[in-house]
Each structure stands twice: as C-alpha cells, then as structure tokens.
Image 1 (spheres, rainbow, N blue to C red):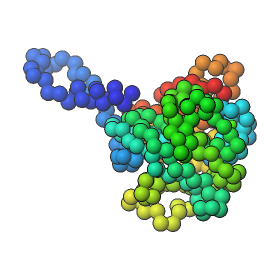
Image 2: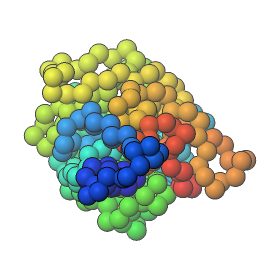
Image 3: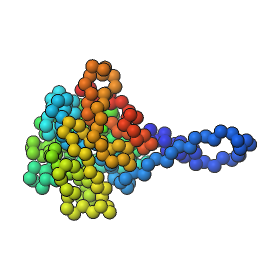
Image 4: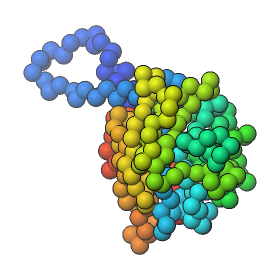
Length: 267
Ligand SMILES: [Ca+2]
Ligand SMILES: [Ca+2]
C-alpha cells in the first residue's frame, strides 16, 4: 500500500515533457502526501497495545485460552519509506527492572515499509505457529511472516512471571532504541509519564482507559483510541466481534479504521 502510494507520488512529481494542449481538460487528482511519521527514521512506531485482556473473548494470541497476562501484546509498524531494523529495540512497562517489569529486547529483524510486528507477552501462552518458525522470541527472529496475524512478523516475549505485564489501572509502555534512548512512550490511567523521558526526543502520548479492548492508533498522525469491535473477514456473522487486531494496521494515507485491511486469523 505504501509502495503504491509512493509510486503514485513519484509519478506525479515527474515533469511532463509536453503540456496538454487543452488547459481546460479535467485535472488528474493529486495524491495526498503521506502523513509524516511521528517518530523519525529509523524508529518503529507503536500502533496498538492490549494492556487489558478482555475477560470474555480475550484470546488475542489464538492459542485457545484467554490469558490475563500472556495475551497482552504490542503492535508496531515501520511507518517510513525505507526499511528499518528493529533488533536491539526494547519495550518495557513502568515497573522497576527485576520487580515485575515487563521488558523485552527485540531480535534482529528488518521491517520493510509498512510491515507490522506483533510482540505478545507470552506468559504461559504459546503462540500458534511456533514450531513452524512463524513466531520468534527475544533470541531468535521469526523465519517468516505469520498468516494468522495479517502477515505480520510475530515475536513471543516469553514473559516469565504473571507480574510481568501491564497494569490495567495505569501504566506506561516505553520504546527504547538500541542505545536505550526512549523514542516513544504511551501512558494510560493513573500513571504519570516516567521520569527522565524528554518530550523533545521522545513521542509521549496518552491512551484512553479501557477494560475490555485494546488501544489503537487512529492513523499515523492520530492519537490512541479504544479499539472498536472488529470482525475478522471470512469467519461469518455468527463469529463474535473482537476488540483488537494484532498484526493489522492501516498505512499512510488510510487513517480510518474502516479502511483497515481484513484480519485473516483464526480465533
Ligand atoms: Ca491466549
Ligand atoms: Ca492492530
């Protein structure tokens, strides 16, 4: 999608050798420029966080069970027009290291423009496809993209404690670059922005409070909103709506949730 948009933009910018003779001819619609990513290259952008796993229908990782901590996930995208490398980036919550902190450093992996990565908490929660190389972990990147999650790259953080998860009442999620500099921080509920985070170098945003849905970025340049009920395509109208979409995110130029590509995973 991004490629297509960039192609349109590139073609539109090529000067014409000969101007059309009829100045009154209908003009070709000009593509809107892609929104400027809110984080600079080469950083990924967090697009969705499931910090409150719904009591009912909360099996986000699709292993058949709803896990309070294990089904939590973070979704990131490459919002740029060049590939990025996400190896060495760290995600962590507001707990102190060693004191029930959720913390994962990502394995070596290149994200092409528009590609999505999903990081599941994974506490006592295997992600289907692990034996097929479809799911990576902090030490090993996934070998291929996961068809059950919108063809995103999927990593299981393999949290080792049920305490190593997000607090529903209030917490924060910080993304550190490979040199441990904060580049994005999302705060919700009663939590404050963590100390030492500099708004001039780190994108700081608040997400709404919710107890039964994820929070999702409403387009690249939009803030976080509660994820609306969503029906994965091809599962029939009797299939319950789900309040999250791991692996599926809109790309530049498509900022409405209605334009999200269909989720193709099994639930
Ligand atoms: Ca699950
Ligand atoms: Ca999503």
